[in-house]
Image 1 (cartoon, one colour):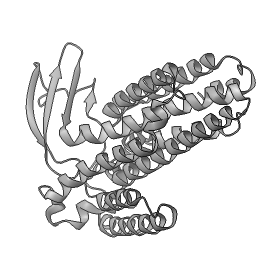
Image 2 (tube, helix red, strand yellow; image 1 turned 30 degrees about the horizontal axis):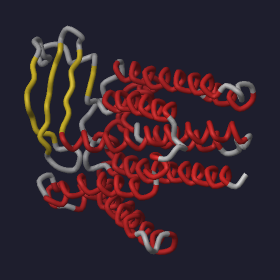
Image 3 (tube, helix red, strand yellow; image 1 turned 180 degrees about the vertical axis):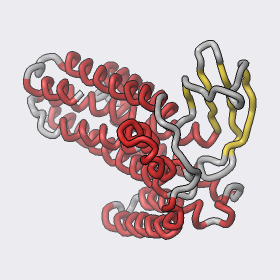
Image 4 (cartoon, one colour; image 1 turned 45 degrees about the horizontal axis):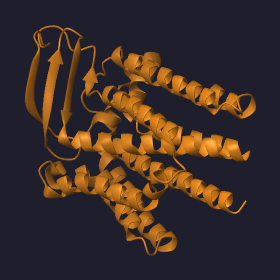
Length: 325
């Protein structure tokens, strides 16, 4: 993927579609290669890491930093746009929620409110700051198709990296033997949600999805797809204007941010090299009391919004420049 981006800058400067095809193929190979590793990962040992005692103070500290930082940054940078500070506050509470609420807050209305409010705030910010650019001529059909394809690839990746889907279901006494589709309740994200479980032995494919998880993954996938679409539009416009500086930086920012959402996949890769000794890393993401997974989610949302805003601003500036030249 990085090689394709480099060639696009140095060799394929007159063929943006060739560059984009190389980047997308590289991204697809990386994502599906990681999925393959996840399917053969070594099962972690134990049930709770020894670091469990550190989760509450870490969660409180991270929550305090996120909330205070959001307030200060909002007052300094966006004094007339309170939605930015509110989003930061909501994400800060999200990180510390399991450790701050009684009984982990599994049935507390605040948890349901958080999971609904965060996507709504993200959508409102996108509508105000980025959607006008998306609707303009700056984003063409190719950009939209690239964004949709990247969103679809990351959607599949998240489903498998988070353990929601698997093509290597449990075998043996407790393993399923016939196809089924049933309802269940999952305590993730934050609170208990209605969910659907299924198993298709002919593939084989097993999976589960809750309402809350669908909202969370939908938010991330939408942000990643939007970033990919805007990045493609910027790349095309930059090639036409012979002003390509910073595009690779934007590409790296978006890619690194997207991978920030893939914390559960880290254990799968680590277990290949370190075996069961990587188990604490697994529990650091899976244990609901751990703030690490929530921190990855909060960081990804904020950075993807920032990255999308950068691309939108650049497209707006290029349109203004083209009108006066």
